[in-house]
Length: 314
Image 1 (cartoon, rainbow, N blue to C red):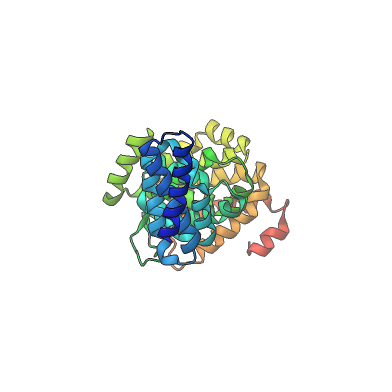
Image 2: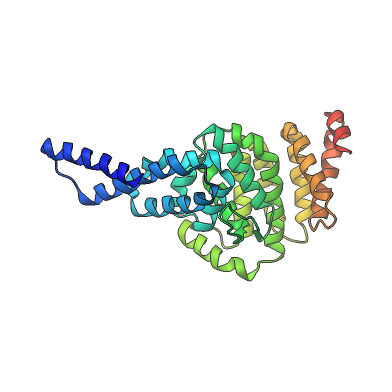
């Protein structure tokens, strides 16, 4: 395979020299390594154990070759379509603070409709675990993935993504898990999160506390789906600040539920289903805020969509 690749490169360079062209060695090396990676992906994408290594190589290549960001789009999309979990988890592990190369990879990953929604669902799964999620990739790596890294990736994606279809499909899970993360990052900021958060703040000029950043991501999510009236109402009633206080968090969740039931009733049924699934766990540490949301929705929307409440068990 490598010999075939080398012959192809030799023929291209011979033609360029014969035509009087001059080659830039750095560009030639970058193009050569990118072409080799394309060939490796084409021949090795069926081998799941190789995928994390290929994703790590793409990240390193993009870090070193900022001027050729789009060169590996095809290879990366092929990997995501075949092994979405391996790709997402490896990017989160390789660049938890979401550097320039990682942002480039996320932009490519969510550029295709066939990959955007599965990737957002995987991010929602990571978001649901604080402070870290245990997910094993195909190469046997069981290194934990920080929920905060998934929040940062989602925040970047929401500013990159134009098509709302994928976000609409994943909205209930993303919304509930972000609220879950606001609560836990307010109640207890664990030591293992500190180094990552300091690096994130340094690179992206983020708020002082991760709970405020989680709220910013919720706002970006609602803005992306044009729930502007909810944003305005929560701001006017100081709901976001109330959400950041452990003692008043459940009250703010109830307030958010009332505003969403009034303005975004289409989403509330799916959110209710997510919350009921969460409450079905034997030990649900977010039980009081979840119940606050369910009670407010049932009071505000029982007349508007009783069939949904019946199916949800309310």
